[in-house]
Image (cartoon, rainbow, N blue to C red; front, side, top):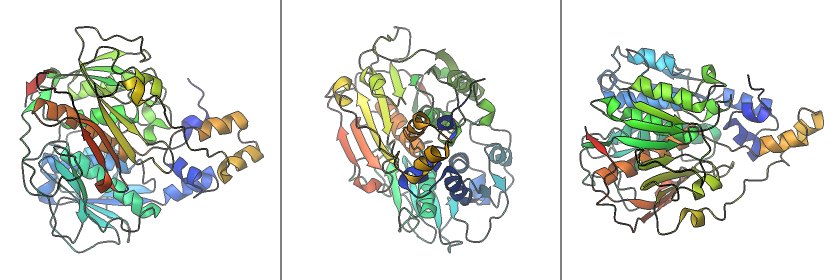
Length: 453
């Protein structure tokens, strides 16, 4: 058994309260998060639909890692599990397995409604998670606003759920005064700033799915990629072959950001745990427990498309050197100010990876915050321990979930003849101010391998 340090145990979003100065000790920060609660609601009709189930289960899995005072679901109509995730036979069983309770919340608890019609507010924060076509987002509960109807692409509900949980956390933490009183959303078919996520942007129906993918890194982002892949409507799940690469084990803090990790998996290699989950979903897997760097080489028989979830510059600098034909890389903010930031790259690009990640900005210097000084003064940690703890990234699972829908959508747009973006840069505080850059390279002749929906 590994002896875990405080840096391995600290909840990565609780750390945001330490680093920002909102809490003066770990105990104070944990008490703050223990007061955060969230209620989810779904009506009888929506509960029978697999896309609404997908949004609900995604919201549960994300929210219970953020709202440590508890997540509840009510009312919950009796319904078989229709979404293709391996969490039981009924919707209720899946909800409990993912960490929520079933029952009415206390008065004033923030509410996320999955779908449903406009309604009066049940609480000061009450939003609806809505989706259609390739588009997902949130609107205030009383608003008549809704995205133009279209056949639902399977990642749109995940996007809507992640944006809803982000908005709820913005509300309870007091980070944004208008949280819950605005419409926020994205189109995964057309993520450009000028795109209207509420309008119909001429999206195609989802007809093709990837058949072979390589996932590099199986933490926060890698597990969000797997969750997203699990939602896709494979007729024969074994047709998806995955190569899963990582060298780390699951630590106590992994669960706070990683949607498929829990305390029962602590000390387990990420490759083994994630391969087991993927195989329960029906996918075929191969694992690589080797450091990813410029010495690595893809073999001709292996997948040519990679989804990268690395959090180090050296690994990213090697992404276009090891033999992949197409790479989607998502990077997340690490500090208490920018942890909601997502910067997505596709490769090959107009600049080599070594140049893109040549000058990587360092983390915020937070060792002078009251919480860290107190730990040092009390002897709870020595100087080395304080530095190690302070250097860990702040992270939130809903950020990785949004990034995963964007990243996998690059592959899906490639298969459906859509635009490829060399860069998508956004912050969940204000996604309307995002920046996108279209890829200059023509990928139209590239066949990454596919199966028909």
